[in-house]
Image 1: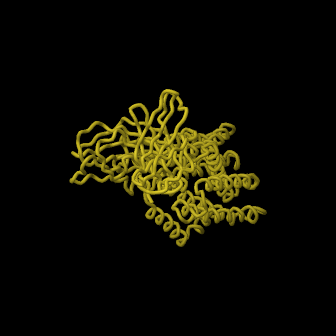
Image 2: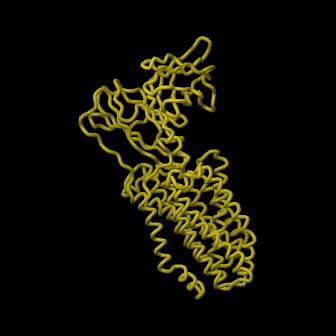
Image 3: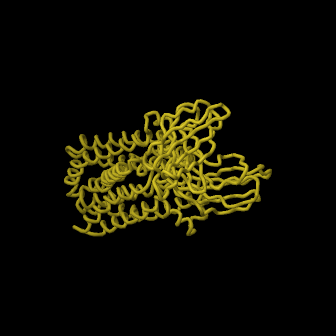
Length: 530
């Protein structure tokens, strides 16, 4: 490394800047709890309920679609039973309750993975007959060491995908094969493959709620690969292998491999994560793809360009010119895709300060402002004519800011986006109703007295219902049957503008007209709060 490069890195790594970096990272990792990205919005029986007889079904309803990882029932005699008989319908998980003659307190310990690949777990406590007098076990999620491992794995993956795969593309297409940046790219790609292993193991531990010492167990890796994060890991390893192949090749082969690696960065990132799982999915995944490819192009070029300039290579001026001409279009794509994703995730501006997700975004935006400032300085002041020493220092500073941005962005793994909190905050009420031949989930939103909306999720049957009606009755308040016809809304039936004027226990009946001669009536009770 030349004297210019060494002086540049010394200039940007002063004691004050190192202290600020460490303070930011330590502050984030100690302040962020283990958030999940899906929310449990209702259960039947409800948590803490005392019911007369054992239920036929246990129902969990979430803010977005989920897949079960672990379902465990602790009986009153403290024996444990794994539950494998369940149905997943839209956002509901219906678990068939095993026959049990034992009265007392039951604990359903559950762990599911949401569509964005992040696990969520908890427990529901209910009693049949008389509650048990003995204490029941508590269930805790994976510890801080697992969360730190997840964060480190994320940061390493970002560094490898963006600086490694992006750097391989820059060597082939921007610096035109100059060897100056090859060693850092090789090191990043190799380090990134190890980081993918760490990420996979940590994801599996988090999915199972297991401690660190189980990281090498087959069940841990199987659980990780069964989440949405599994395809991301597999594609990321392929990306890094192509990046290695590119820097070890020459000519057309190197350019084709590096281009494929750059494109695949966007593909890998669009397979999982809270942004990629948001609706409309086709738009959000395309935005994640665009964002990822743009960032890889920009940040990946920093090290090769800085080293080429510092060593005063003959190709340095042309490489800088090629980068300067193309980067404005990539920055525009990054900004547009970032604004779209933030708008969908935040839903409202107040979430920037009211939610952990928004506060992480504010920190990232502050760092991005500094990065754009450096980029503008490079583009308009230091490249015409090239001020080599100052430009190398500025590029080195950009690289450090980029690393900080990756470190902050990795914290999003632990912060649910505001859009996933909306349903949980809506205070809904839910009841599962069924007969021997039909079943449905009835959801009232909001779950308090006044004007409400009702959604009815019928279990799929061989025949599409001709008509569905909802009947609501509050006998204690003297309110007779209130009958409303439901309309078809996607895969559910909806009732809008229903007014439940008083709180208390309402009896709801769903009448499903199958044919002129067949009518199913499903009835249950639901509690409406004041």
